[in-house]
Length: 47
Image 1 (cartoon, rainbow, N blue to C red):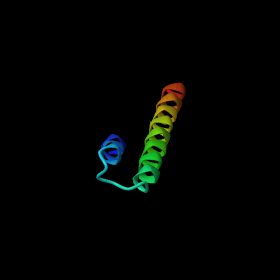
Image 2 (cartoon, rainbow, N blue to C red; image 1 turned 90 degrees about the horizontal axis):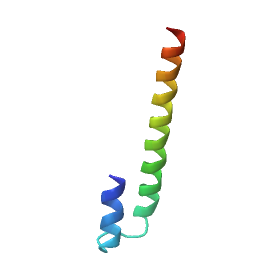
Image 3 (cartoon, rainbow, N blue to C red; image 1 turned 120 degrees about the horizontal axis):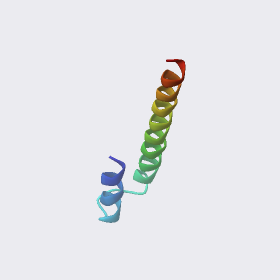
Image 4 (cartoon, rainbow, N blue to C red; image 1 turned 180 degrees about the horizontal axis):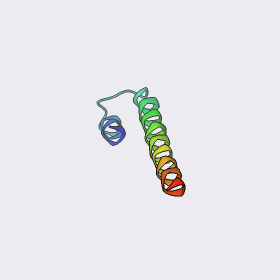
C-alpha cells in the first residue's frame, strides 16, 4: 500500500498528505515484522 501511495504521489494523482500515510504504513509494517520476529525468538528459546 505504501508503494502504491508513493507511486500515485509521483504521478500527481495524490496530494502531499499521502506521504504521511506512506510513512505511517511503513512504520507499522516494520513494527509488525519486529514484533513477529521477537515472538518467534521467544518461542524458540522457551522450547
